[in-house]
Length: 211
Length: 131
Image (cartoon, rainbow over all chains, first blue to last red; front, side, top):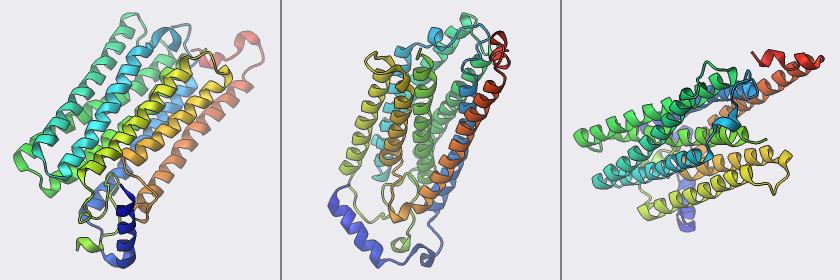
């Protein structure tokens, strides 16, 4: 986005009618906006779970707390996976924009692999915690922890399924308008999940191990 | 028809399909975003583990870093900007942030207040939170 493009944009805005005079918005804009609203409602749901977690952080009922349970190295790797997958998802949007099949498949594959690695690490962490008796039934803190992190994990799982379905659609239907709109929604979803994870690793894993 | 469309879908880099953005500038935007996000993430992990900083301020510092990183993600990955074609997206986002703040801050304030009022005998302190 260089300065020349920005100036060019401004000139075009001047010359064009305002939004209300331009008639109905393009379908791509309406669909994107609708999905944006859904994502915000999803984030409000996460906010409620975050609030529950924050309230119950110290309610360990004599069981293990965050300091004993959380492994920062694994969290750092998970964060790296998710951040890198957000980046490759962005590259995928660019490849879709310029109608490059090979680039789209490659970026989608890397995104999928990174998302799967994230999920595998998270499941390993969960399994390890349950194995030492720190399952969701142990204390209110652990219930809140599994709800919050598990809910994000479920979203990532749904995103991975969605990505696989979208790649099948690209292969069969090609880059038609409907497929492109779905891909736009998918990339919004994936980036929003990364924003949720930023709060998650900050609130749960980093603040959780502060003395 | 495309000439008159004005609003921008969230996540779209440009509302104008006829403006050649060029893939290279798009890659640059995502790469800058990734670099900034990595720096902020690394800072978060460093802040949480260092003993150089005043312990009382670390939570606040982590919160600030998370807000900053959220901003980076919104601008560089979701392309939410302050441009005139983005007003609807920003307004929806602002409403979402309002609700999120009310839910989180409200819950924390109310529960902290409840704990304060439950406090007096030391052995009963925080009792309702230990079940």
